[in-house]
Length: 380
Ligand code: HCA
Ligand code: CU
Image (tube, rainbow, N blue to C red; front, side, top):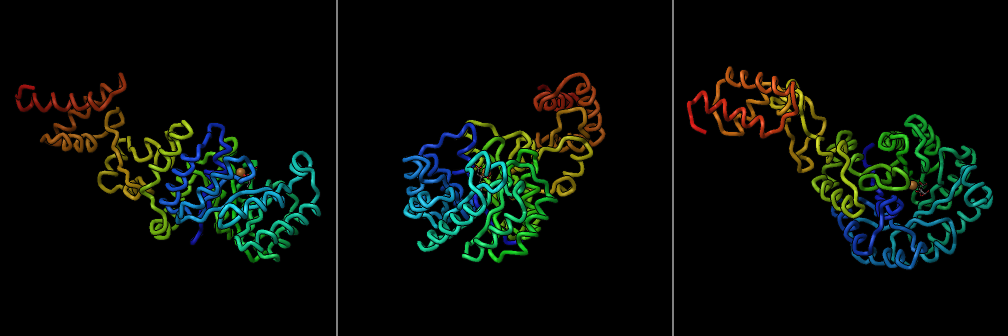
């Protein structure tokens, strides 16, 4: 899984998310934020999609970002001839190879697909640009068709071939097998694209790397067609555990929160409560047993360190599952002094009330302060 690279498609796949409406200025802001975070490639909507789309690709290419810029096109000479003039570093070509797509989408057979793939790839290469060739709906395509087309394009000399789970139905074991098989017949790198319809996108991306893929397509917050693809933040959570030095030295993890907030704002969604890293409770510990251990050593109940992302952990002490260690830490935060026995007494009061109704921080703070005032005979 080491030395993977990220191709972020927030500005292409992400534009296919139901809520997305990107102005040029928004696209520029997102592209800059992605580059600051450190994604290796940024994939942008095809310049033939509309007049504005063409301006967007050209403008983003002129920003001089650290990330390389790709545009995503159909396997057509016309699309390719427009794409190579935009200033991109490379072109991501795709075409549907499953029966579903051949019958209900473009209606072409494999020999036509192969012929046009060769023509388009050779043309893009002749312009000195990177080329990737991907089959859409790879997991429902015939394996013989896939291996034929991949070996053909590999011989012409593409940088990467792409494997796409367009409908999000693949599971990690299928991913491992397909990538292993393809890897055994090509010499170029393998890129993957996983939709998240069945909740396997991150797991599939990770397994793809284990099987020898090198490039993973992501989107900020996973936005894309339907419920989207591999989310950049969640994928980083997975990878920082798998390969901490590489991830921390290469990607600017402290920018994840701002990047997600930027995109969430632009597409008018909230960060999901259970989002890896940035969900509001991602580093909140609640049960007394957890709180005690976390206060002693955070790694007891944390696989991710919030500080790596510029975030902090939180002990949720205002509830009936709380324990006296959590309350003690709150007492210290309030700068009060009480004995352990006194704190245990307060804790049982809090638990009694917590059995009857939800508590908030203010409630608990008042209980602590009243108790403190009483034992010290102070006026509040
Ligand atoms: C689509 C295309 C695609 C392309 C993936 C790729 C997919 O919108 O249907 O270029 O590898 O999911 O198949 O996003
Ligand atoms: Cu897709």
